Length: 276
Image (cartoon, rainbow, N blue to C red):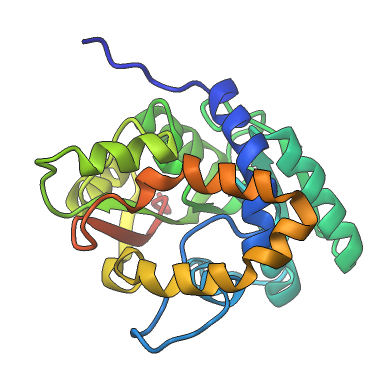
């Protein structure tokens, strides 16, 4: 059977539909949560902001640096960068809905002078060589139709010595019952690298790896924590976007919860384009 790889337009349509609901649950952060233990009762937006902080802080940003947020979602991570580090952030996404929401959020929070959001496909970036000091990619590389091509593009737009930090899911145990396939289908993924394979992709693109961590047990392994916290917000979100919309969102993502909790990992890695 020929593998069908989602293109940018299909990924964009997926996020056009799912982002508004995820935005309401997690305050502009569509990525994973981080819970310290089974008794951690953090709200969804708090738990997801922990991932934002961990990935961003791995970049070692300085005021005035130019940052590309590759797959910016509804904008909260980019605003976090601008507000806490004084960096200048350009966010790109293949979802027009996300561009609109991120722009409105920046205007409301007074960061429009440091943040801008635009439609952009990271397979072919519309930026000159060496345009950025750092690249942020939170759960966006996993959607790449061609991961090698995307990493080459991100390498190209970084200056020598520039940094990249990303987070993404990883395969930690083999799939024997179709559980991981259901997970990948729910997220529109056509590949799910292991931790070592993720690092190998970075090296193949020319990056020098400086730090990485596997925090799957506190992310995917704490799905129960998130589910309980999200259910507490269900009525609030349903009142904003409609009960039917939230129910459909839940049904589309049902496959996300199919794997056993130790099958899916979560990699955070930081690397650098060599100075030479």
